[in-house]
Length: 430
Image (cartoon, rainbow, N blue to C red; front, side, top):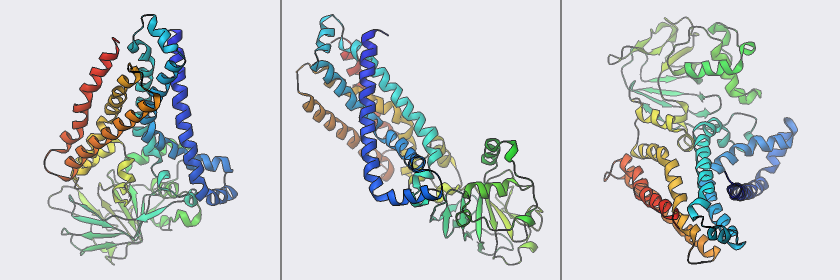
């Protein structure tokens, strides 16, 4: 890397940082006006105010970077090129026989790195803060509740409903599981005090994160019948419920819900575990033949994750591609055309964002000598056209039968990709 490359790269990255920090500062200042009282109250009962602000706004800044990183990079392209042209540095470099493509190469490579960081942030970082991004400032130290969206498990014929869903602890309050398939001895409904989500793979990962010194001791089911209302006791809901399940012996190696305080059927201990004729495994496990269950507990085998029960759309928007693809492939739940389109859009988002940045290259060359603000206006029009194309394609794939979701999601890249490549090749010689 030559000295001029380092100079252009530093100038470009500094512009990107200034633009993002300015936007983040505006967001924090305006949002803090409405939430500062709650944040100060949180600092009085727990961490210091700077730490509370970091815990609350940190995940939002990650989300803001994911939403605006490409646009900021595109604008930084124009600002950097405009600055080089205004100071005469671009003209001097061109007069030495260096092409625009060679001058812009550091910014193109830096843009590719920024988009890669966005991809890593979107797929591996943001999903870990999904619960934090749904919290209000007053709920920062506790578990939050939201309504449960009824979801039907097609493989078992069970409609999963409930009163409230505690997203942090993965607990459904007052679950109401309606049985549309024939389960002998259970009638048409399962009623309980709470239902705790069990995932053996996630539990093993959580145990490894806790370390050997924090491993819970194995206990019997009869000693764990106390309520785990973490919000009321001031304890982390996720840690409380997961510690309770991790201490049990005999938990199944399949996902499902542990129903506690079962009220219906009333004589649960006399009803044996049952399944369906279409499935080889048991679907509802009872204490009649499962000694690890308490007298008022049962276990319902299902792959309907609590994220699918959230009424807010964050479960889809903040999910990784692997989660979305797993939901589409899950035979237990119906996948809409919109979800399939969203999954394909997430797969091609990184190359599509890079193609958008390459579209601005002819504006950066600016051989007509147009003013910077005219170029910015042209870039804004380009961005509006880009998102209009994406919206039209997404609508066609998600709400009509004209084209498949896969083709609808790939239409913008098929149109913009060749055009962006031709523009990249063009600036190499001018």
